[in-house]
Amino acid sequence: MEWEADQKELKEAGAELLPDGRVGLRIHGWEIESSKASILKSLQRQEWEEKLGTCHLPEMIFGHSSLVLKHLESGLRIHFNAFDALLGWKQEALPPVEVPAAAKWKFRSKPSQQVILDYDYTFTTPYSGSETIETNSEQRGASEESNGNLYWEDCEEQLDLVALASKEPILFYDEVILYEDELADNGVSLLTVKVRVMPSSWFLLLRFWLRVDGVLMRLRDTRIHCMFGESMKPNVLRESCWREATFNSLSSGANSSVQLPEISIVDILKLLEGYSVDSAAYSDPSLISQRLPIIMHKCQKLKVPDVL
Image (cartoon, rainbow, N blue to C red; front, top):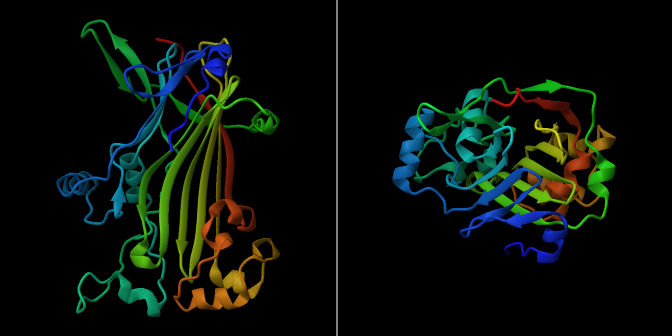
């Protein structure tokens, strides 16, 4: 279901929708646009395999879907796409998560095939977005993109939760799926990015959610917030939080912070044996997020060079 903008609220906030059928808006010097497309076709998947140097890719890659936030004055462009995310997966190269023996057969494409999971089939990625600076080239009469001197600096400043919790009108909202894999019916691996724009700021959540039935739950969240202001260099804050827990820790109750009352001990034992269980708390990362222990957390501020 597509977001329907309120024209009165847009006008009061000094915002306008993007023209020519594009999805997004312009507000306070920012141009925010989402784009959704179908999954990659066979030939496109082969091209990606060659570029990434792998023969393993998620089942569903929305390779032409993206979210782009561009600050017109500075040329800063923050964007999210599947290719860069999978590049991060390839570079991190985590060891494969062990699959229960009772469920390993699901990965076979042929009945006689021997299953050898010698790569990170969960497609876990450390990806937290892509940033470039767009500059005008007088000699070529065109714009060019580079990383310039952009970098994220660790900081003590936190996201403004009070501002985010205020009851401002939402001028624009969208969710873009970047890739998804059902892990041969052994769970789910899903990367999405959501954005909402208010009169005072924009906020987004990039989320990688992994559930390997009977083995592991992993959540990697990246939240980015930018308050609108008069400065030519925007103030962009990023919070990264990684959480995960094994099903063994859930079933043993060794850590009270990962107790899940909504999941019965019977269901957990079924999951440990490789069986699927339909449980909202088990399937919804929003419900389970606060019950998984944090393994990494940091806040950073984007350092933007002087306008060129």
